[in-house]
Image 1: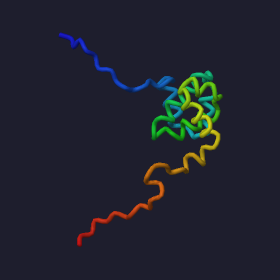
Image 2: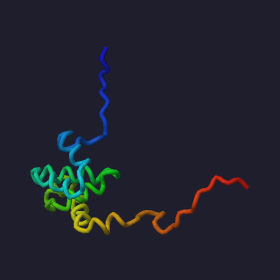
Image 3: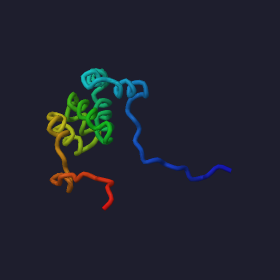
Image 4: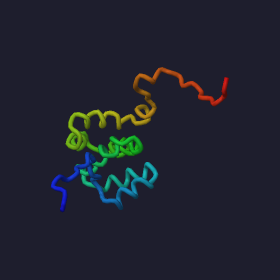
Length: 115
């Protein structure tokens, strides 16, 4: 008997095909931007937001967002799209920032020496 309740994953779908996404992941940043440039504006905005929201794809998302119009990013992410647009215009500065309560703390070396 089939389960009447279906499991819904809280995961958004990638706005491009697996083939295009694979090419983007393997490409150099300049080549990834060129690949994304060939997409329609709204799809490019959705892709930028999709990547931006994932830590391991954050830089790729900023690179793609750098060639997006503000309206495409706002259409894909609402008010957050405006933030992504602004950050994408200076990605090196944004990627270099450390934010959070740990930002001003120096990391201590971890040792396994016993006392």
